[in-house]
Length: 309
Image 1: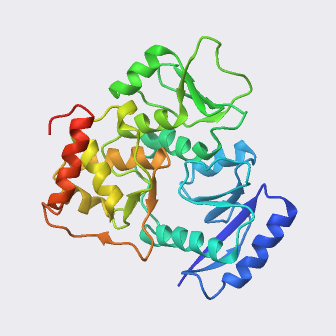
Image 2 (image 1 turned 135 degrees about the vertical axis):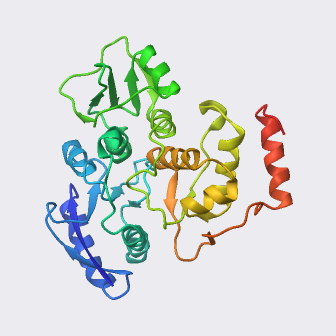
């Protein structure tokens, strides 16, 4: 059994106390042995979504997972691990087991090519806080700026065009002391996140593991984001069941780079989750695994979106 260290930050004192008590109850039942630790030694962050943005920014550089705690006034954030307060022991256990599976799937994962992923990785970590009033800003080598906050990303029109064309390279987002320029164009944070992933590097994102299985928790809005037959099929396949990245490549017949970018886009936008132990997982499918009824379903969606059936 792996031992994982967890740190809670930004919680109210009563919530933190309840969390510490529940960890003792979880002991022996979880898929990992959980230990409380300081943030500098932690493997997992357990944090309020209203916490200090600078903490999330610094944590994002590590690529380690975050469990977000929200209250009953908050809408559900685009993040893979979320608990609504007050939560029960079994709810905590379920989330911690999902985190443990993710950590077990990629122990000591190689973080090569980190520079090209720094903007995407920091955006992924900050997305659950994207509705907060504070601003974060990322810059490109050309000096273009993207401002994240209030549920939007603010950029100029040319930057949006370069983003959609795949020509935008972002540095990591950092806390900003000022606001975006008044003439900046606003784009929904989840849409911006989707484009960043979809136009990113061809390799599997460094926070994803080749031997872990992933599925969509909900469909992307392909009508707004731009539908293609490939994205439609990958979305449908990933909604029906969980797949490892290599299995999704094999079953879909699509290019490895396209599948990797789809998974990155879904992950950064908060649409991707790790399969739990009770889900049907496809690790070595044969081509043509999609059944005839599913093909009819895809054909109807293609026609609805104006694509070739």
